[in-house]
Image 1 (cartoon, one colour):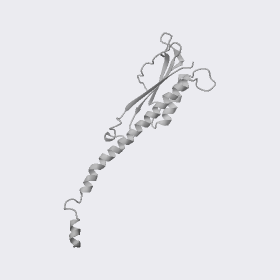
Image 2 (cartoon, rainbow, N blue to C red):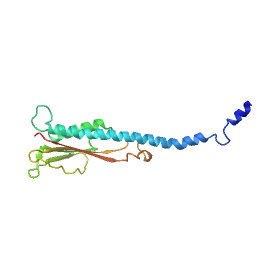
Image 3 (cartoon, one colour):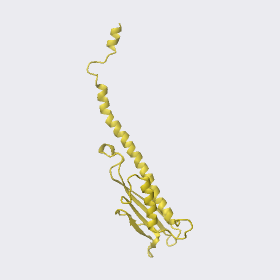
Image 4 (spheres, one colour):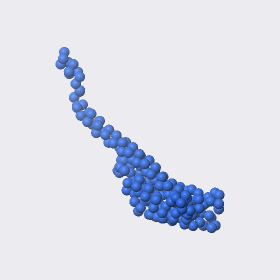
Amino acid sequence: MWQREFIHGRRFKGQEGQSLVETALTLPLLLGIGFNIINWGYLWFMVLALSAAPRMGVQYATQGGAAGKATAPPTATVRDLVWENVTHAVHGATTSTVAVQVCSSAKGVDSTTHIAQCDQFGPAYAFPAPAADPEQPVYVLDRVDVEYTVTPIIPGTAFTVILPPNLKFHRQVSMRSLY
């Protein structure tokens, strides 16, 4: 009786490696899904980090920089603040990989269009032209643009399904100048 139960509970001949084959087929799929989820989370981290830098830069430019100053800071000072934010938040970002454009009333304002003049720093990038304030000439818009090429944290063809390699991310923030 005991032998009969043992024989019936046994696997059929030829099924000894079935679980190994199933694991070999599903493991690459599960790893691909897991690594793509990691790349997706990295993309959202990049969106947050690269959105905060121009916002802080334009706030600094429009509010006069350091406390107690009654003039707008120069564009190079705003650029340094933006670069500092991006390079400290994003691993691998340097001043040679992050393009920054600062349009500020401190640089000057075009007398016919009432648009703040711009300085571009870092690698060449074709930033869109700044717009005039809807209530010009009373107000002038200060603007900061940041452009960075995001590369996946886990490279490879199978792991870049969600986040394509060399995705360009551009963020632009405009605010009315106090000066």
